[in-house]
Length: 156
Image 1 (spheres, rainbow, N blue to C red):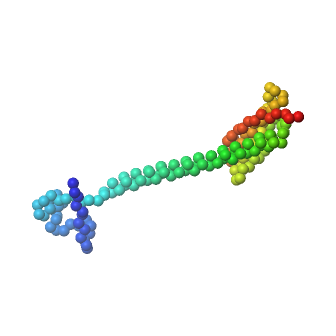
Image 2: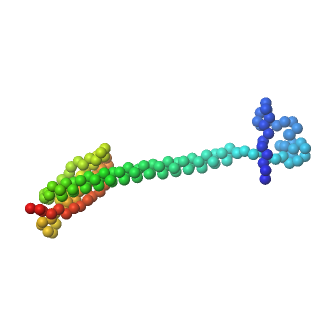
């Protein structure tokens, strides 16, 4: 079905009808034919479209925020892994025989404040010790990012 464009006459108010087309109000034009429908969007259609577009944009923003947070968490996990591996490598390369117990020290990586907790446990074989290094995010107390373990031999 083809719709006609609503007539706009210069100098007339948009809602005003010329005298000869007042019959169009009842659906009949002055020449006896049925009046055509004017095309365009109603206010309700425009509002529904705006709600749909707003919902889509809101979902897009939430997705972007989620991706940003995931990227930040991934970066923190990578930095924490480097911190724990650095300490375990230091023990291995220095041929340390670490004393049993717990030790806490700062292990900052870039602008990320991290705290390392090193725990030394005995093993069934007295010539070996198990070293665990846990990395905690200082910004969120109690959030343990990663824990790495290594068996250290006594080289003496």
